[in-house]
Length: 176
Image (tube, rainbow, N blue to C red; front, side, top):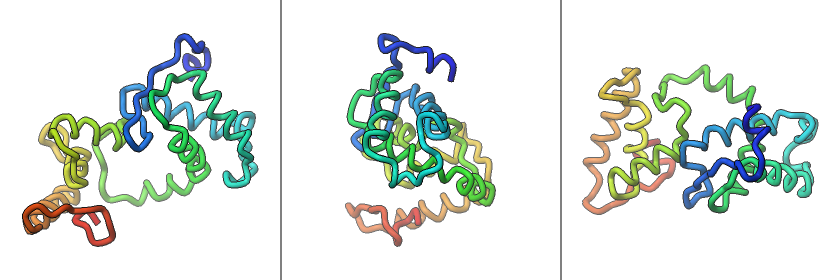
């Protein structure tokens, strides 16, 4: 992150966000890593406090630091603050990540980036099945038989939906 820390306001990396405030361009990964560094730094972020107890002026200071290094095109403040708040869960996330049975092939890309790519490619909002498929398949290679099985089940269920119906996210959707 040395290059990011040394960046002046005139050299800020451009970050494009979607309608949910999630970064979606190639520099998104750099922003996410920078947020992680800030969140874990005892100097910028008080690790000894629960995020809810951190005062608003400290949160604004963190946003200001980020905005001196990144030119964020759109309103991403809520997403950034949520990302910082999640960093204190990193140990729990690591343990849960080790228990997974499905292994996505998206590398450092976020699901928001995948969604934006699919939106352009498909000319419509991608379904969660579309995003799942893109996340677990790469150049016609699927790295996990469980992912193949799940994807086949989702596609079969998707075919059974009534014409014109939407598979809205929820506890009983195809993805769940």
